[in-house]
Image (cartoon, rainbow over all chains, first blue to last red; front, side, top):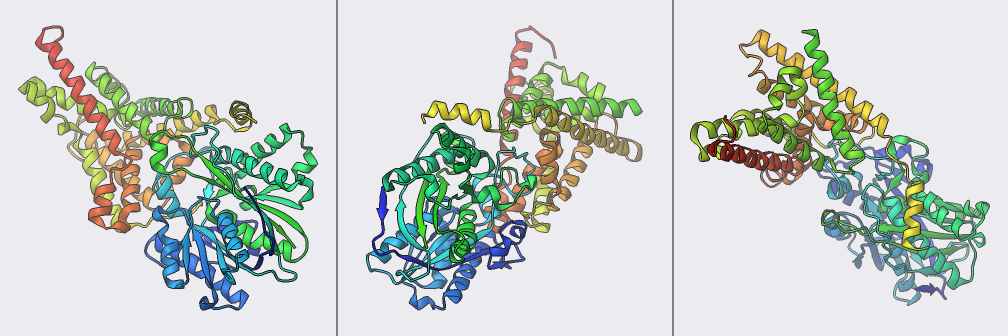
Length: 330
Length: 121
Length: 151
């Protein structure tokens, strides 16, 4: 489903806050705050993530010079059971809140909804974004963090990061949403939770091709098409799928991935970064700044999410995935 | 004495290689792999073969998780010999209590002392 | 692109586990842990009144104690990433499974967290160990009773 925004909802400001390990990220100079305690001085991971979300929202409101009373909607989600970190952060924020779950695609699904609310005239300022916390996610989806299991080269590292965007009415010189595609759930039968890139790549492919087709565009119409957290192998797979369609390799270089680049070539992170905070902290810091400085004029942000739970995996289900895309122009 | 170290090293290492093959080639999770090895140790114990391995390799056979299955079976069989049917149930933990009790006690102490850390280095 | 074609591409592009290297690392680390175990059991035989047969119990307990320290300081995870089965198969890996789960679930308290989640990972080892021991001993008892084998 492709949405075309008539009123051009703008991204007024962006903020990204991360945990201490993320100072190894190649994007670190774009992050607003890098905290130096992985639990953010709290006694549980989940409370730490709540502080992470609050801090990112505070930074965002400060940058845009707005108060929480000015915010009409807070749209966000995370990966923890029932999304308590985000909901608890919303309790402190005290604004109208809709919790959203699209796994790591929440960074863009929230942005699309914020754009629609703005388009409707229902919102002047909406905060959209997502967050993830490494330790909280590990224990939720995999093993206790100190368990000595060998991760394969296809595994990805969930980042501790939050990224948020302030969405408002069209504003001269600000990046705005031209169109968006709400993805379909795609399942190509992948079932390895240590190989999420392979599960998510078909969803990204499906959403990107739908968007381009409905908008009558080519890949080369964009300065960059940024996927969220496919990782090193997932991005290769996505490019391989486009290569099968006869897309030339120089055009494939327009495709970039946040998770693939996040930690550079550090092999200790295996196939790269992942998590709802991965796409959010890359999109709402690095990509946003590149648009504001005019390096990119037209960008397609595609956040991908693996819609599994530990339960569904243990019950032998495959991993359905989703990708949401938003077309930004400046 | 030096040979006992070498035999322990080789036999223990080989049991781990079997585990690695189960994980890499058999695509099993660590939990499946360890469960399978315990069952294998238990069957070898029942056949009376694991004893030979312990005599030959010492810690090379008692340290891998297979020995857990072997000693559970050993305990059950020893009690069954003395008390018949009832012994199968009652004898099981007679020999192996140390691994489980140590894990429980040190797990508790570990929870008191440490916090989980998500660092990479 | 259909699902089958994608799976073919996925198989080609995804890196395979370096099985030879993983086996070598598992062999070395697993072997070293067992050799350390051998040294610990000699320690108990020489300095305490344990015999070759009974030294196994304190040896296992000592190895699990060492595993607790390594787990708590975050080193067992790194060892596990390097060694794979080499550090998972020795009883220290069983200890690591119990202890890491205990540390992780400390935030839910000692009763609801540590108490109920301690055997989250290692529980299956105990289950299958006990159940297979039960059936093996039962079969042996039956065979002895009908006179096929002797104790």
